[in-house]
Length: 277
Image (cartoon, rainbow, N blue to C red; front, side, top):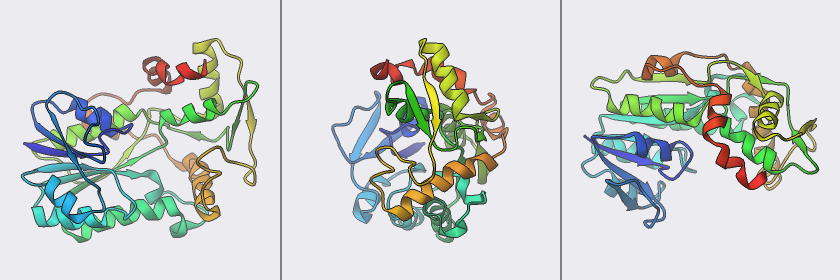
């Protein structure tokens, strides 16, 4: 079976290309010199360029999709023309979670449009509606000053998920003889807060970070501060809305292995914090 992986150098896609064994794997990447695992063929291209996508899909049976700026419109059209057996799309919990601005929320609208594009094109699809990533605590800690980690909604509780569990769920579907289509809620095993994650970081690294709550008007570090106001507020709504997500057993159902807690992710990803310690 030939499988295309988009976002192969990213947090989830990187795990997928390493986990797909026994298949012919092609990675659509912007930089053809990007390092790939042995046996993975890198194809240079852009997800919003129809010719690039069509070329990458030549001979492909199944694909993993990370949405581009066009919310998957080009990919859906090309996938339908190529007759793909299955597309597994990384979606978001925001698709079916109540947010203050509803359908106007940028993040929710982006992922909802991606799901709809594949559905309307008639492409057999599975949607991994992932919760917040465990990895997302890294930039918050990186931005700490004087051991103060400033966070929006630090006590909001949500079942944050290990990106490796998202990847394992995708691989299970991509490799299945008869994959079950539809939407899956991909979460960690239990709800926890950002404040508790910082406490776990303190425990593992012997640090003494304290948490300071950010108000909505000031909330932002780096990428948030640089966004247009409407987009920035959409992301803040996503942080708030994560508190409505309930733990799911879909990772276990797909992979046969329970989703892992934040402590397990942290133990395996200490290097992500090395530059900050």
